[in-house]
Image (cartoon, rainbow, N blue to C red):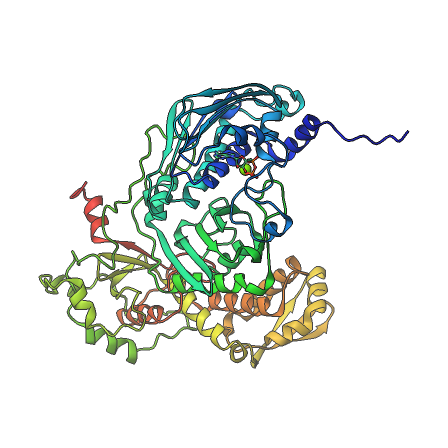
Length: 622
Ligand code: ADP
Ligand code: MG
């Protein structure tokens, strides 16, 4: 006789439970998916001890009739697909018919359900996969499932559970994802009896983001809305100032399903190139709808991974649309200290979703600070006095402290900002119109804008200007220029090695280097963008960069790295004194860059103190 036997159904279910039911949060996920598939508009979730003791999910959806309620707990019982062809076109969250039997196999489960058409409902009690009771009962329309004593019959699994707090955190994450994925549905999550998330029926996505991440965060996110054929993108992307050290605040839905997809996240991040510091990641919530046949959701039992068909070029579309949104909004970080946002499971007060901006955005705010009269003067100054980028400031230049002129200016102009702005010939309408007031610590420029005050980091701003200039015509700036006085270098043995390995690439970047004997070398020519006095430093920086990134860099990335280094070395430094015309020219040039808001390393170039912020800091308003 052979050795192979077919496993009994309840053993098979326990095995399946290993994949589907990893922890309480996965049960919540499966139950809520079922509630959504049943057309619910209100879903309430309650967990005790992070769900380890008890999980209840109730909905007002279609409910089940008595036969369906029983058969739903059979393996591969589903009402959502009926044949293999349906797998090509899945429009529901569930389809595998595995969740209910798997959950029931490893817990004590009770169910109450009633359909709209029937007078009485059905009750079920199942323990470790065995049906103990099935009875007729009164019940509200919809379905309520309670799962107790998770893993009571699989002690090995139970051991892997973390503390109730950690599990509650996972549950909260899952419910947050549903809340943002389905703003039209009202969700309520209770943990040990306390409400920790509540959203309204028919709320907007921004409402949901506000209830999950707090209003401050929601306020600093920009709407994204685009379509290509029947593919649509909708959501909110964070301003660069909202960046995080991890990707935990990146949420993507495809056809209503929360998915983890590196390609999509990278496509979004690509649009933030040069706007974020190293190791920082943007925040976003993006909902994608596409033809269900373009995506394979049957890749993983938990259904959070999907495979996309290449022909959509979804990544390209996403990068383009996110770039467009970033390019058409002001991305200036505000000076106010943001309040705490309830992103986890700990808030003391219930958080009711409501999107009520406490104040309007700078662009829409009728200027509380009066408009500046001398617009022509500024335009003229910028045109006639080009900033000399490559040379360091010398002490002979006029030193500018806060100009007395500013105090004498008429402050009484009452024209609202919008009217005044119409007259400004602004090359980049979203960038605020800035009038320098003076230099602070020879490092920052204080400027007045259409609403309030701006502080500009002169080095970061100039770096941005030079970087974009260089990147526009990289060939021109990496062309070799002979040095009148060649620079000699003494290199370490390791540096010689790196140099020998990369001498051709360096020549391509514009550095012509010759061996001079021993460990000595001569730099004969340097790229055109390089400041003469900084050639040696930039060259050594590059060698360093080569030795750390030996196999990772492409020619294009390398050129960019070189030009960033050059922009950095050539830009005005902190402690360089600037005259008023130079400050004006700097701000004027900054306004014409594609991304005026950060330096190429992702540091902010300017910070905004709106009239409202200032009033708040001085406690004029509360
Ligand atoms: P799947 O969701 O993959 O179909 P499940 O095991 O999660 O498999 O559920 C089995 C079936 O039970 C579903 O197809 C659905 O018909 C029914 N069902 C489960 N939960 C609910 C609910 N909350 N409301 C109505 N029907 C439900
Ligand atoms: Mg399901």
